[in-house]
Image (cartoon, rainbow, N blue to C red):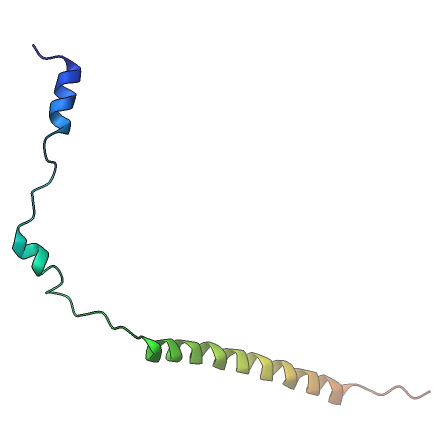
Length: 77
């Protein structure tokens, strides 16, 4: 009767996964499109949206400051 330690050692030496065949190594990415080296156009589009939002926020802040100045009642001494 093998001991528990011997069974553990035997199980650790057995392969856990099926070995890959050479065809899988060569054509590993054949089903996916190749990755683009430069992704600048999408980065520009993403950043353009953020900068436009910032512009709108700053313009709204400036506009409210101008409205407050126009509506303020001057104090005469």
